[in-house]
Image 1 (cartoon, helix red, strand yellow):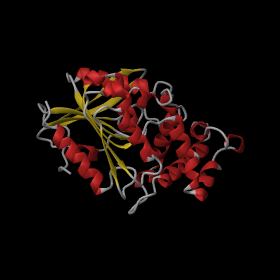
Image 2 (cartoon, helix red, strand yellow; image 1 turned 120 degrees about the vertical axis):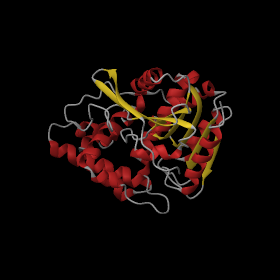
Image 3 (cartoon, rainbow, N blue to C red; image 1 turned 180 degrees about the horizontal axis):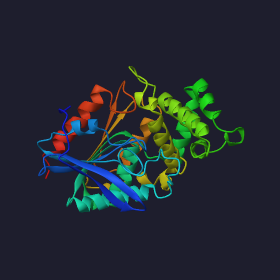
Image 4 (cartoon, helix red, strand yellow; image 1 turned 135 degrees about the vertical axis):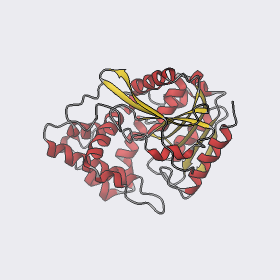
Length: 317
């Protein structure tokens, strides 16, 4: 990966409804524009994303999506209302930022939840997208949420039983994401804190399917735990407010936009058929299934494929 760099410009964009979205730009001010679409929801755009891009050739835009990272208000604050934080709002934020920065088209780099959001954005605004590079591909369908929150219990039965038992007994056969979301907004801070711990413990479990896995140290931070858990359950509980299967059905809108999809074969929490189905429906998309790697970009082969795709696309006008 490329050396660490600092942004040359940054700010808070007022996108309405009391939201101010943090953005930053780094690399070459006259380079090829690229937008980082981070995961979570709620992870924020960490500085490590910058290192995928050659700073001599790319003008890289990083955004903290609503209510996370350096954007305000913070989802970890008890009184914050998330009703104006949906997929449609995030897409509108990207478009407002693109116009504010004077960018005609930009490449998208995204992962995990960022793959869902990136695909939804690209299908709604294909004229604004030059290329797409996604890893750990998801669509955030109801089927996928049910798989992660319930069926993955077949892989980790003991851990899943603890996760399920973290919600009231009457909620255990229903939508577990929504059940946790209610707990995470409980008036009692002790209830919120325990729900955040239980949710993040399961998050750290269902990605534990590849060699070299290590616990995610982010979840040691109680503020991040609450922010992350609130946003994930908010989105998963509503299947990202997307019609079931719409991203695959509308993949034809991406015809003519080069795409690279990179997915670990051992990513059991987001099975490889998600990426495979998208590649089948997207004319011209490349699919790379990486053996012995799981969810995220921790594996060397996944990183190399990301870098190779970005280097190749840097040459396209």
